[in-house]
Image (cartoon, rainbow, N blue to C red; front, side, top):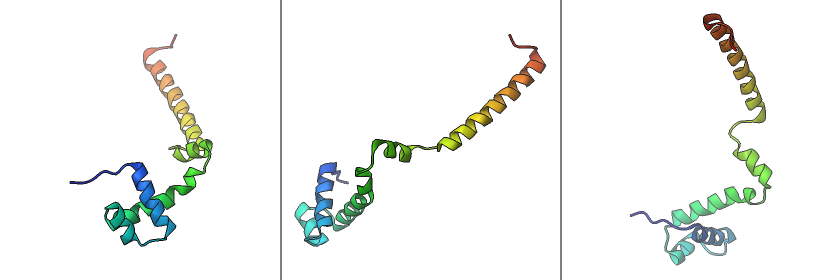
Length: 97
């Protein structure tokens, strides 16, 4: 059965590994986890550390799925397609409103 560890526990173990005062094996033994987990949590903590110091706007920009330029381009394309469809509809059905 797979164990689930909470964020505080993982952070505590990762911090001990980052300190480097003891070996990964010693830390794993103390916290009763596999050494691979200690290494994984340490790596993840180090990779994500810069985001802990970024501003909210920087985080939002990073999380944004599309760039502003991409969204503006898509809006333009949709406007052109909408106008085309409106004209075709008017040709088949007659003038709108």
